[in-house]
Length: 211
Length: 184
Image 1: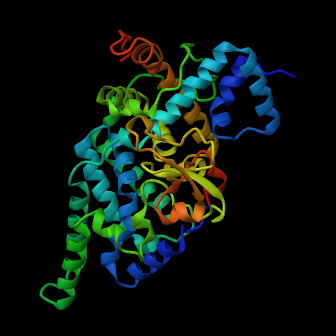
Image 2 (image 1 turned 180 degrees about the vertical axis):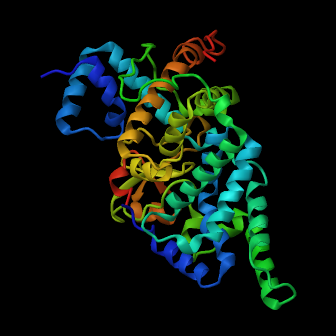
Image 3 (image 1 turned 60 degrees about the vertical axis):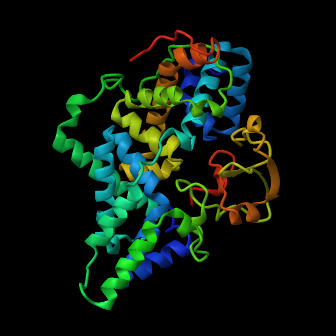
């Protein structure tokens, strides 16, 4: 598995453990976005995500001595964030609100893409438009959690498949299967708007809204 | 030997991540040349990966950084009234002053990264030539399609530099074209 990240990070951790607590913020700062986005992906609510992200950071500080350096610090921090977010969900009985989209599908079965629309390459400038960002966020939020969390860690936060597996405490094979499903489902959800709507019949095509 | 559409759909995600064998990759590429449907699925899936990889999708809430740092400072053992306590408070204040101040600490290379949610390019050979866009955050193998440039704004100049220089300037490696150097 991964090592403890780069040298400056492990020396920071050693200094913090020896008592220079104030350096902990420097250690966490590069990953604050990843922590927040992970919490947001699981909880789908900004206030809860900020709360949980904060709790995860405090917990990481309190438990830093238990960090053995067998994985990267960032993976360990995200693991804590995922656990905190899951605990919060259990408290809120969030499963009652889980979206029904595909949540009962067997992971092993082949997912058949529904939409075969031709896509042209979508320029990244499209993301300057808040409607597009909202579309993407809504589509992601509509996925069942097991797909959403894998997709966020891998494709939004750029973690490796191995790191995502470790952070979520699932197998590498499950990460791959769920990632495939998540990507194809998002494509199906967004195709009516992105492939046919926004860019082929710009500026305001009447793409159907699947949610 | 040929692969069916179902096999292609099963492997399309691994194909995009470079996780299929060279033999299967060749078979899939042959399939894409013949099958319009699977090519549409591939293009759409690529677009999804490309769009969601963009930092602009989720903004960090205003004040989030300051709030957790304040809470953290409060949670630390505080020897109230001692010089040490004051030192901690001053250190916390310095951190609260934001990433601009942090980026100026030369002894903390992580703080100077252009993108906080990528790993630094420590594993990339320093002499390797890479492409960067002046307004981008990541460095790429020349020709990588994930190089973002905002040419329409007339500012996204692309430069070819050594990886060491890109890293020095705070660029982080592209997780697509440089993935073999990551995941360590």
